[in-house]
Length: 246
Length: 221
Length: 58
Image (tube, rainbow over all chains, first blue to last red; front, side, top):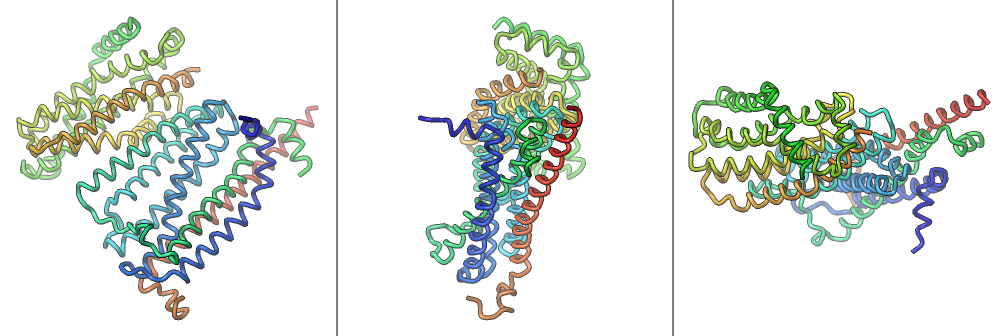
């Protein structure tokens, strides 16, 4: 197995130029996917039998929740790669993930509460999914706070990487424990719109939005990562060449 | 094994010499559990319903209070660097420190809980179960807290950060532990909850010291 | 397809929940995109300054 592609990704100038080239592709693809998802979800999909037009919140809530978990996994994986292979670029990826991950966790909480209010009657009922998202938000905040409290980049990288890895092991346990705790008290969970029973007109826009949000994250990363790499490498020769030619 | 025993006895001896530091979390736990009846109602039937939550949150907060000293005191006078540099097995060093911390904090909390629980309407028959649940829970808290303490060792505002990091990690322990305690108090079958709590404890005991050791090496550089 | 523009905006009575959700989510996309680009611009400026400082010493 030839792993040169992996090590090439670990080279800061390579990843910088690659991100620069890919950014517009990701950006425009995300825009097309999200636009078509919005069109399908808001205009084409019929209203839900039980929830009426209110169910349309799913088209922004589900992708946000999906993104929050995906970004945390990406952050933890990058952190692990950084620790195992001592790749600075991997640590830069992890650092770039934190802010956007926390932001979309918050979005999933806000949209979740806005969905819950008309369905449950109150903004918060300790629904297991939302409760787990709240704990995920704390995990992101903890990661960002830990990074911020160390001035030395190398130390901040490696310590926060360990925190991300520990958190990653914790996330499935937390989700399980919260589901278990909630099932004992049988709270209503109106967000169960099972995929199997969703007609295509409802499901396709959802898949488009999920894909759109994912590609948006890639677009975001291909910009944010460049800034992170530049900051870390600003005294090196390739950076000097790059900004001289820019 | 010898290093483990030496470090354990050293830490225990130091803790005994600083009774204030050792008794503070226990005193805090007692005060917090005493505050709830004062804040709510003296009626035992009402208190029994919230007793598991009060005992567990009280134990968690008391443990968090004492975690700061787990590593910071040794780091401040340079002992920690010496220990890390000279130890063959960093994991056994971590286990020794965690064991000392638990013996001086977690175990007394677990033993004290039924007494304080009686003030919250916990029946005498439930006391062994309450102790068992808190023993398992406080072991997890000491292990998780040690990892968080190592992560925040050189950080600015490390004390607050330690709390922020430990709380999400402690959520499964509190959920399973409080549930086990509640079922014990009500007299139902608590076996399921205890198994889950024990599973989390075993997982934490296996993985947390490894992570803590790796983090200590970075923190002490 | 909705019957009319006003029916579309009313969202069957759920308008006060649906539209703020969309604003928050799409707003987050817009804000994070803008933030990434502004951080990149700042990093480029920093790198240019570092390059200039370096060449001055040389």
